[in-house]
Amino acid sequence: SSSVHRLNVAIIGAGPAGFYTASKILDKDPDARIDIFEKLPCPYGLVRFGVAPDHPEVKICTNKFDELGQDPRVRFFGNVNVGEHGKISVTTLSKLYGAVAISYGTSSCRNLNIPGEFGSQNEQTSVQVGGIHSGREFVHFYNSYPQHRTIFSQNFLSSGVTGRALVFDINPAALDMLSASKISHVDIIGRRGPLEAAFTTKELRELLSLPNLVFKFDYKQFNDCLDNERAVSTLSKSRPLQRKIDLIKKFESNQQSKSPSEHTISALTNSTFKPKKSWSLRFLESPIAVINHKESIDVTMEPSKSVIMAKNRLIYSSDSKISIENTGEQFTLDCDVAFKSIGYISTPIQGVPFDYQKMIIPNISGRVVDSATNDIINGLYVSGWIKTGATGVLANTMQSAFETANAIIADKPDISKNVPLSAINDTLHKHNILQTSVSYEQWLTLKELERANGEILKKPSLKIDSVSEMLKVVKR
Ligand code: FAD
Image (cartoon, rainbow, N blue to C red):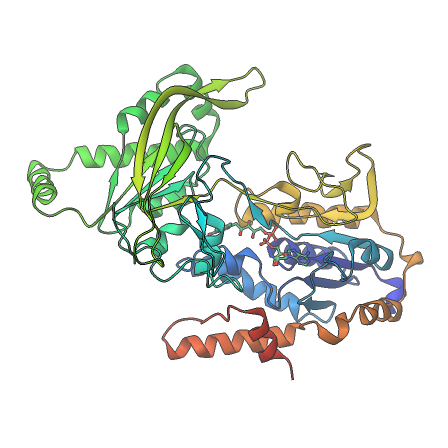
């Protein structure tokens, strides 16, 4: 049927939220047409640049994304940064399409805002030296996010002065790369208690079962946190939380039930050879300042530092929110490297309301609302992390994208007012998009090259980590 009688949808961002929204819309309305605009020449968002390299099973969803990308009802415009100065805006897209679904995810991370956090800057490369580095950038770095290869030098983890690294708050992703470094111990530190920790049981189980890695843990503090009425009641209400806590309890009793000979061996091992690597999970502690020690003679090495830590206690407010209070007790942790991993955040886009408290686009079940009046803005939708905040895993992102797609279908955008496809194309041409964007076929060529380059090194893929390089490959 002619495009005039079809639902035309624009989706901004080709991460999982973008693809899952598109897929549900096409399920519900097989006549719909979808144009996906993506900032980078490549799709997949955090499935490519977030999910850890040792979790290939998580990336299987990209097969489904590739199927969608090649569906004749879908067009992919890669290398189009919507809302960037001089580029196509959300307002323009809203005039062309029956519905615009914004799914551009997160583009920044929270800071701790403590003294010493930002260290100093390497004058030549403008890269941060010392202080507390961004876990997000580190993840981007080891996942080959374009232009991130200079952020961490090759020797970043090789000073090994204290042999200790700290990862703030609880996200085990960076551990993967640390295993190849001179770091021998990693502390993962959470400001609240074990019941409030955001890591999943699967993540914890994976870390606990890594071979040759010792788990050092304050079981007394852990058990104290659970030994009160509130904790018992919280646990009784959540099966997933129970499973997570039981995993640690089981690990503890397994340790205790080891035969005496095993104990002797481990005691011997501890006194004669130091165990190769270890990690700790610490609760109720927050960094309050960083003292950056002098840079080493080798400027490519990260200088060691002392992080001043405060001990916290939990405060329960009447609306059942849990916050923390400093107990006044302080101590110092010396380390080679420190990362903050306290949340990814979104940034606003021109012409669309933004909630600066939650750092999301305000919405009701995916329908964008005016921040001041709470009125629904017709034809404008959000899905994924820009809708919910950076929380949960792909399954949650999928559910939230389906909710948004269902809202679009339920709202029945008035297709009698449709702009014809030729007029959409004229506007895309005027914005240089038809001429310079990367199509899905071109992306698949690039992906095949990455696979072939990887094969030489006996790896599944070798990612190209620069936009200009990607464009060189796909363009004539
Ligand atoms: P994103 O994945 O961030 O996608 C947003 C897309 O929009 C990107 O491609 C971006 O380039 C594009 N974009 C941004 N701005 C613009 C613009 N102005 N114009 C056009 N395009 C734009 N989940 C799991 O289930 N398993 C895991 O193992 C797992 N590991 C994770 C590890 C890390 C480090 C992180 C951070 C997350 C992990 N997740 C995992 C969660 C999962 O990645 C998210 O649930 C999901 O990616 C969120 O999808 P999204 O589409 O909202 O955002």
